Length: 347
Image (cartoon, rainbow, N blue to C red; front, side, top):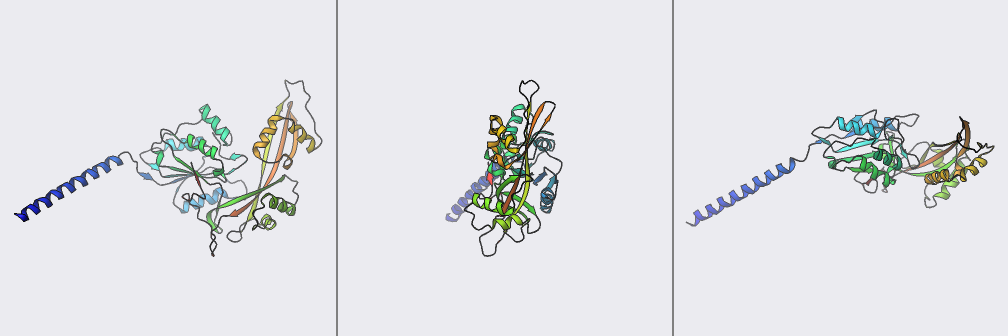
């Protein structure tokens, strides 16, 4: 009698446990109905190399080695969104990588639309307001990390927020970018990050490396360990962690139409005369302030065409890059992992 009772209790517990497991399995299956299967990550190479800087080619090689699907010839946000819409199916991408040049002064080289303007907070907001971009059709975008490999983009949280809006529909993705510079170079490491330091001079009017090294040392007084003069002479990282530099130009241009004006088009004999005229123009001064580059750091010129005055400025940026490395005895580049919150910003 006692043995029979134990057996009945055991069988009852077994039935209860089986029912719980079946119910849990059914609940799990029901939950998974709304979850689309993951698809391999994809990479948009959203630009092309114009000079000895092989940024896009090196990035292409890096992601090919990781067996990521490479998407070419998408040079605008419009083209990227259109591609995603055309290739929509029952899967979603866990990661969408976008490789594109950017800098703190001119925004991204990626255009808003084909033949449109470079992406900045202002130009992208305007494109969204004007309805220039299609809405992203892909569902399940909440599972996706959209990672921008664009130098310094993580510093601009306002732009990251607008990019998030552009890629959102009824769901929103994670937008990820680093405030540091992305380096794709197979010499010492295929992909790492570097902290940038800047100094400027009027294009074609360099004061020389010695004076530039003194200026940048004064600008960044807390960086005692960097040999600024040596870094301005280094064109590449000769050993892991060595600071080096590269340079690029930032051109700016304004046009003033005098066709319906009683004013006479001014003429200028020196850079100083052009700068004095610019300072008196509130709209130009306001734009220059946004760039945070002193007016005297530009080489100024002008021309007159069809009763229009065209003001031209160009500054050369010397960018010293200090690779981010470990502080251990054996110095290595810190792994450029998007999960590292010290290296990447997530919006």
